[in-house]
Image (tube, rainbow, N blue to C red; front, side):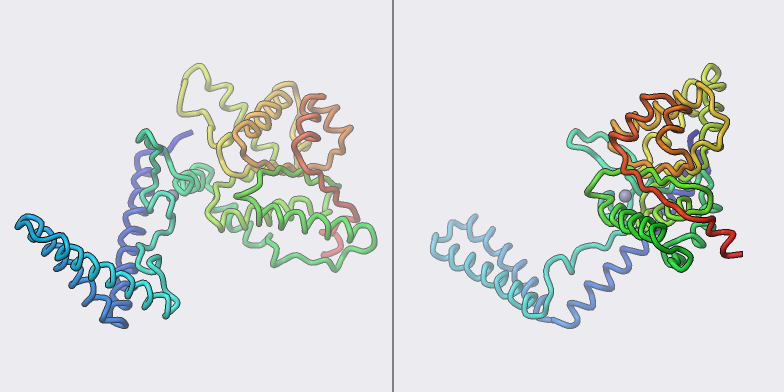
Length: 322
Ligand SMILES: [Zn+2]
C-alpha cells in the first residue's frame, strides 16, 4: 500500500499551507515584541553598526584596546537584551519560528547525520490517515473517548478492575513517548475493553501519533491480501505501516477465523513491532489458555513477556445502557 501521486501532493500542499500560516504567525509575534520593547530594535541596529566598524578597524590596523572597547560595548548590548527579556518573563525562545512539528519544521521530512532523508512521524500519521481512511474511525473515536467514561454500571471487583485498567491506560498515554509498553485488554463482551482501546487511540491520534485501529478480522484480511499479491507486486503492497505505525490496535482478537496463516502472521507482526520498539494494544475475549490454543505457545510467550494484561469483568455494559 502506498500513496498515489494525488495523495502525496495533497499532503505536501498541506505542509505548504502550514508553513505559510506559521511564518505569518511568527512574524506577527516577533513584530509585537519589537513594538512593545522598541529598545530591542535600537540595540540590534547598534550591534550591526559595531560589527561593521570592527571589521573596518581590523582592516585599518586599529589598536587592540580600541577593538576591545568596541567588543565590550557589543557584549553590553547582549547583556541588556537578556536582562530585559528576563525581567519580562521572556527568552530567546519567544523569537523562534513557530512550527506545528518542530522535528521536521513542517516539511514532512527529517535528515539524519549522514544527510539521508526519511519521512517524519507527522508525515507517517498523515499517510496512515489517508491509506487506512481513518476519517471514519476518527468519527467513531469521537464517541468513544475518556470524556464518555462512566463508572456507574460497575460495582465491587468489577469496578476495581475497571478503575485499575483506566489508570494504566491513562499512564500508557501519558508516557507514550518515553516508555515503550504494550497492552492486552481481556474480558467478555461489553466489559469495556474495546472502549478503552478506543480511548487510547483517540488521545494518541489527537497528539499527532500514527495509529492504526483494526478489528482482527480486517487485519488478517489485509495480511492475507498481501500474501496473495506477493508474486505480482514485489513492492507497494507491503503494508509496512502495520509494522511501523506508533500504535497498532488489534480489536477483538479471536473473532477472526483462526488458521495457521493467522497464527503465524500474528506472531510475525507482534515480534516485528517489538523489535522496532512500536507499541501494540490487543483487545480480546480469550484468556491465556485460549490464546495458547489458538495461536501457539510462542505467541503466548511473547504476549506474557512483553505485554501488560488488564482483565475487565462484569456484565455486558451495553445491555445495561439500553
Ligand atoms: Zn514532522
